[in-house]
Amino acid sequence: MPRSAVTLALLLAFAGCAALGRPATSRLAANLSASILDQDDVEIVRDGAPAYLLAIDGLIQNDPENPELLLTGARLYAAYASAFVAEEARARRLFDRSLGYAHRALCIESAELCAAVELPFGDFLPSLSQAGRSDVASLYGFGSAWAGWVQAHASDWRAVAEIPKIEALMMRVVELDESYGHAGAHLALGVLLTQRPASLGGRPEEGRRHFERAVALTGERNLIAKVLYAQHYARLVFDRALYDRLLSEVIAADPRVPGLTLSNVLAVERARRLLDEADDYF
Image 1: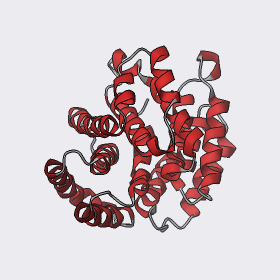
Image 2: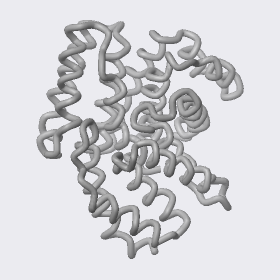
Image 3: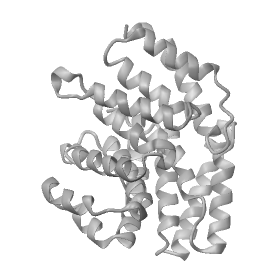
């Protein structure tokens, strides 16, 4: 699957950690995250994000057992790699760090889930079913980082074999709090379920329902939801009318939404590219 398919939506996940547990790092990380999320100049973020990556690394080094900081680092590394890094080897390194941070956070929050991740799928599910609402942040953060890592290592069949676990994990997030991270788990599931047509084992109609739910839950303010819906579902089932409508709605929308501005600006850019490419697919 395309590396940026799910992980561009990770830019949305910063909203899931509005307040960190330790006061000094809480204010700094929350303010930096907010400044990125509400920025409408993509080039400023592209140029400035590496400095923030280094800052987060330093904060984590100073407070290595803070799961909220670890999840912030995981989200930022994944989002930066997805949105701005084209060189595959470098992207893999960034996703490796993202997954490492997210895994550390999961292990701090739940030793049982941490151990279960390494188990076969059938043994992983019972531990996952015991997760509660208090685990949503670490589950979603880890699942998002894991999805990005798998996409970056798509040539490794052992990485791709982890997709059923990621799908199950995101389904558990939906069961516990489907709105978390601007309905990010629904978006991840929508993409995962529309990688193949139904004739080859895909579940596009189930994926469509996840996309539609994400759009509804966010009041159509989360523009990347419509972009992914068009790119992964409408194109897969050759629905040109739906494809054009969704992307045109994104382009016509005001991207400036608190907490979503940067993601929406990137979504508008992608919508324009996808419309330009439409004749190549239909």
